[in-house]
Amino acid sequence: MDQPLFELEHVHLTRGGAVILPDLTVSLPPGASCVAGPSGSGKSTLLRLLNRLVDPDRGTVRYRTRDVRTYDPLELRREVCLVPQLPALLPGTVAENVLFGVQLAGRDADVERMLELAGLDPSFAGRDAAQLSVGEQQRVMLARALALEPDVLLLDEPTSALDERATAAVEETLRRLQAEVSSSFVLVTHDLDQATRLATWVVRLEQGGHLVDQGPVAELLRR
Image (cartoon, rainbow, N blue to C red):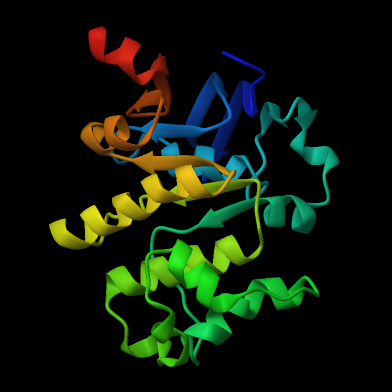
């Protein structure tokens, strides 16, 4: 592996007295990585550790070799941007939603370009966000994240609430983003087939947050 993008070293995290991640050590390289595992394996929690939405009880999380606790949380979250599993759009138009985060940061963005990158027609800009399908809402969330021009996208089960057709559309959007945008992404999924379609590096967790394996997709498939 080249210089890791993220490193988790002996990370231990509990919540409500239950162990979510027990002494986990993994690395994620630049590019397209995936954290795969069943429900209850701690994969979404791992994702939130990467931009300090949660901090470990013990251990170290590094981003580009630097302990994430040394970053300003808001600045880190603009550079390492999470797209949550369930869409959470604000009342108003699609354009207003796309611009929300970037305007809080005192900047502006090309809404139509962000929508195109996220796989939506620019004509969506003026539509009421509340009238969109779940798949369309998910892509507006992606456009809102892209407007921040992040170095890393954290994608938490981005297709879990979608039907087969919408899932294929979102996956195609992510593949296109890899070609058009220099950002890396870390995808969380329970679907190993999706991991092999979208990622070049996979971390596999099992129930209780234990590491099963990690490495290049092709190598893991051979195993």
